[in-house]
Image 1 (cartoon, rainbow over the protein chains, first blue to last red):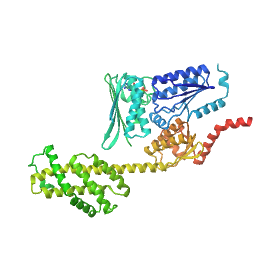
Image 2 (image 1 turned 45 degrees about the horizontal axis):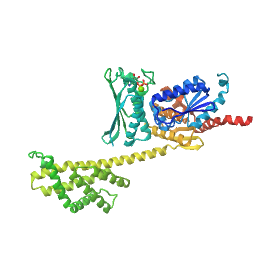
Image 3 (image 1 turned 90 degrees about the vertical axis):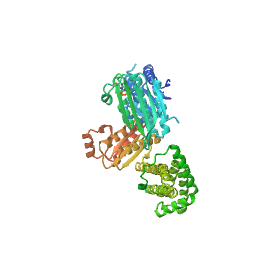
Image 4 (image 1 turned 60 degrees about the vertical axis):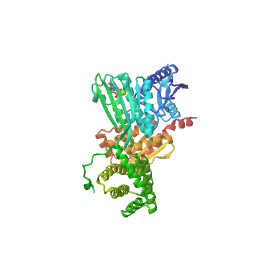
Amino acid sequence: MAVPILKQGNYLIASIQAALTDADLFELRNALVTQVGRFRSRGVVVDVTALDVMDSFAVRTLRDIAQMTRLRGAETVIVGIQPEVAFAMVQLGLTLEEVATALDLEEGLAYLVERSKRTGPEIGSHGG
Amino acid sequence: MADEIVMDVSSDADIVTARQKGRELAGRVGFSVTDLTLIATAISELARNIVLYAKHGAIAVSLAEHGYRRGIVIVARDEGPGIPNVSQALQDGYSTSGGLGLGLRGTRRLMDEFDIVSEVGKGTTVTVKKWLR
Amino acid sequence: MDQMLTKPTISPMSAEATAAMLRELVAHLRQNRTRLREEWVQRIIEAQLLTAMSKEEIFAEATSVYDSYLDVLETGSVEALQAYARNLSERIIPRGVETHEVLGIVLLLRDVLARELFTRYGSDFGTLNNVLEAYEPAANRIATTVGVGFVQERERVIRQQQEAIRELSTPVLPVRERLLILPIIGVIDPMRARQLTEQLLRGVRTNRAKVAVMDITGVPAIDSTVANHLVQTVESARLLGATVIVTGLSPEIAQTLVTIGVDLGKMNTVGDLQGGIEEAERMLGYKVMPVREATQQG
Ligand SMILES: Nc1ncnc2c1ncn2[C@@H]1O[C@H](COP(=O)(O)OP(=O)(O)O)[C@@H](O)[C@H]1O
Ligand SMILES: [Mg+2]
């Protein structure tokens, strides 16, 4: 099941629609890393609202996405983690500390916009 | 209502199916959404370990009763390589596959009861339970 | 009475014989329903059981219990009785009927009926023994079923009330847009910690909160277990995109916690509630800063 990735200005938005297998998650990771490079995106939003379970593999993949895209100049923010899922993640020991989170897509985009204002345009200027 | 489901686990699609079916059965017992999420997450971890380390195995989910307490039992069984040092495998962060090493220890935290029997060369059986509050 | 019966001259009955015996016995008890039920109700009132109920109510319930009792004796299946016991418990628990009263009335019925069997079969020792052997286990099962049904229902009610009280004891207050306050008062045990976390997370979602101030001034003791729960609460709220500020943690307690190895670095702590709210507002205000700058420039 492929996750649709939408390009919106400097940002990529991946909205997960249904439960993902490990292979789907790998695919998503690779697609995002490739496209961040291709479009020189400044940020990535991964919307996980539709996920009713996030186990250690899913969380590790999200963390990998954040780290890999960061190396390519894009900040990743995970949005839409459900209350019960957050509870289970913390019980499991997965706190995703190194990754930004926001309530929903709107908040996630606002976070990225604000962040790019704060960090200024330098990153973009010496890119490419 | 079927009181037990047994699922073959040998591919990563089976991991998703196992946790969805398990969640469904647990839902009929009357668990809260939070507990259902904990249960589904535990099944996911156990199923993944089967696929990753033993290639194939089975997960059985059934209703549990103890006196007047009701709950759910999950048994994850495989005939894979087994775990040489179980207490080590139960430590947070210990992984032989470059994983997060949280599956077993985390599952223990998610559930009310946890039991693991593993023998090198024979296989591994993990039994976990969750009681209705 | 029991001594009289110490047997063991009589060989045990077959299952069939037991069933036939029970059938005969039930037929007899049905025939004498009016008299026996009356006697039972009389004894309930004498024993001052079910005092919260009127005589008419007692009579009505007694009739139902009497009939289900015979049904169980006849069929051996307690399911219908279980359902009735649950239903009965639901009705009488709110009126303050106690466990001993419910057990009391069922045991009284058992005895009223046993005595009746004595009178009827007493002349024939062998038959009486068989009758009692068939009757006693069934009667005990009935008593257990009703007793357990009642206790379970009571426990359910108590649990519900506890939940409700707990929920009331931890209000999640949306004080202004995107800001929640959780004044926590009382002891935090693992159950409550979990409920508190669930409430906070739900509150964050429904109010689209960005910051939550959790005030623990009213929590009498904080050991490492409680502190770890608090850390988990903070972590899970962050996964939703909300920041939790913990207030009311005294410097002494903070020091103790650090000494025993609790990672307070994960918690955003501010001295008191007022300070916490100010900090929260700064955080929320900070978010709109760039907009303000933009308008100033424009
Ligand atoms: N079913 C199994 N068969 C064999 N080894 C297992 C099995 N389950 C777990 N293990 C071993 O225990 C270790 C810890 O497992 P776990 O806590 O799930 O973390 P992870 O899967 O991330 O490594 C694994 O790395 C593996 O060596
Ligand atoms: Mg694992």
